[in-house]
Image (cartoon, rainbow, N blue to C red; front, side):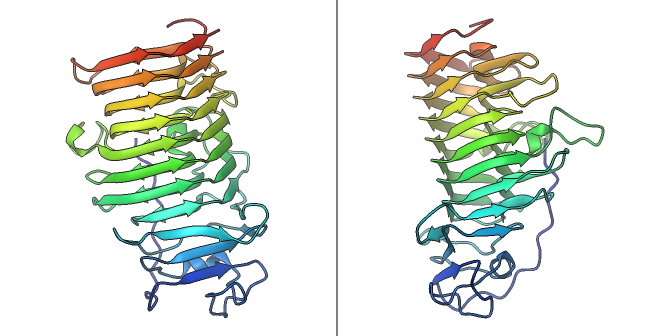
Length: 351
């Protein structure tokens, strides 16, 4: 239940003051980078720079880069660091070309926004690959991380469940947060992203669980986690998995064809809160979830649950495992699941 984390490279000296930095495939890493007329060129230049609160790192629309983007530094409560775009045309494309890493990654940073990129990382064969990955290993609270308006497509992580080396499809995916205990996160927003063709989890937030830190500690669940207005289509694993959260909010998402790419007998669900303390799932459209093992439901409140989880105003149809499953094992015996004001049709097997 914990991913193998890649090591953090040495951090470069901080910049003198906050600024806007521009990156263009036709640029020059020897330039100042502080205007569209003098842009940097490579991911390596960005990766070797430690940014300050208030900085904006802007990639030119229509541009293409290969490799992995791993900027350094943190913002603060007054000033985000933003990884964004400028110009007109298609989203900047970053292709990791099957590297065993994430296309865009943050490690032990906070107060970051990643907005408006297209990322891909595909080569056939199981390995630790992600689209956008946020990891925290230092045991601290990580604040205000926003993943907005990105296209995350064609990510080949791990097919199926545990292999002989202990790896699993739960540990990889499209947009992925891994917050190691005793750390947690506060104010995470995943909004407006298009996530498709993912071998692994499509959108996953993984924090407090029962297998480390002395067992399940609901007081250490991550707060203010919001997953909103995303589209998830065609996965091998779960569509939206939120684990270790305190009253998460998931709303206005479309999740379709979950597990369609799966080739093994695997239990999946389109929308799955677990190891959590309450939550609200509303105004979601969930459809065509495949049943490759057990489960296969649109919604699943399952495992170490606590408090009251509400599923309301959702539309569910053509899910092979059914509309909703409650399997609140090992949680609070007084935990509640409320399903109300939903529309379900042509959902198979069970309600």
